[in-house]
Image 1: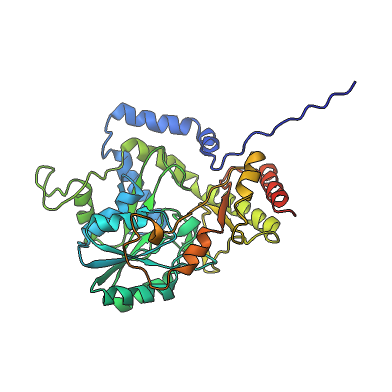
Image 2: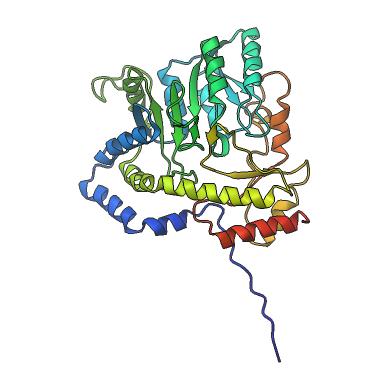
Amino acid sequence: MNTHVKTELAPIPFIDVAAQRARLGTRIDDAVTRVLNHCRFVNGPEVTELEGRLAAFAGARHAIACSSGTDALAMILMAWGVKPGDAVFCPSFTFCATAEVVPWVGATPVFVDVLADTFNMDPASLEAAIEVAKRKGLTPKVVIPVDLFGQPADLDAIEAIAKANGLKVLCDTAQGFGATWNGRRTGSFGDATATSFFPAKPLGCFGDGGAVLTDDDELVPVLKSVREHGQGVDKYQNVRIGMTGRLDTIQAAILLEKLAIFEDEVAARQKVAERYNAALADVCIVPAVDPRATSVWAQYTIRLPQGGRDALGPALQKEGVPTAVYYRLPMHMQPAYEQYPSAGNGLPVCEKLAGEVISLPMHAYLDEATQDRVIAAVRRALGS
């Protein structure tokens, strides 16, 4: 008698940090051991080496490693002296950290709509938001374009608007480090850039970490002072309000090994995105990349008409395919931020996207068989 046994496929990792760990193997072990042996756990030589390599990779004059992407944003605002009465312009369709740091320094976040195709800041909405801020008696001071899901914002248009209005440009490339705009890598634009090395990021450490990149020679010592409790000639002289914003040496050692394979991983992510796009474009709205840009594909995010995504996540989960929704509630609708001003039209694109987006597994170690499994599951769930 023949028996038929149904075999269940193992769940697919949404982001496979373990596969990367296996690839690097003893390189990570050896890097950490070197730190354990020299015992310089704070501001050790690996931190300095990492800063040099990050700056060279991005094409920036300076990199200042720090404790997280959020602290990188905050350090820059503190170093610039952003204060109460100042307006800082942020996209509403982003993670809360972008706007969270603005009230920390007493300033006012003003929320801006995004473009439906790239999910990034809409330059026309930025101009409208600047006028709103002025009418409210605020001083326009900083714009924070976010490189959402891995591709840069429209830096040509945003930098032009910033120049015309006397704004500093603080690029938030927490999700886009390694991407390019007009052939230049993120980290080399604006007045300063903040990035994150959270483990889920395309370049991530084994804990929290971040960095500031800038070409501004005069900003660097101020940032380093802010990072070290506002110290002056030494740690017992405090010349400004600061924070504890250092990157641990062990994390720097890990990042050095990961940076060595980063370009290869970005290329692998690009291939996954191309296969997804080719296979899913007829059943959903696949992500678009501006022709002036490349993406590092921090997330692969599709769109479905209102209500269409609600059934997709549970259906894929049954087949061992995880999903995630970034972001269900735009910043201007969050309870902690709804009192702050916005561009004035209700930010309709942000609100529309919040009900349509859903992200599929994306990382450098998705082989074609696993990609095909994801694709087939999505097509079945969407009835195609």
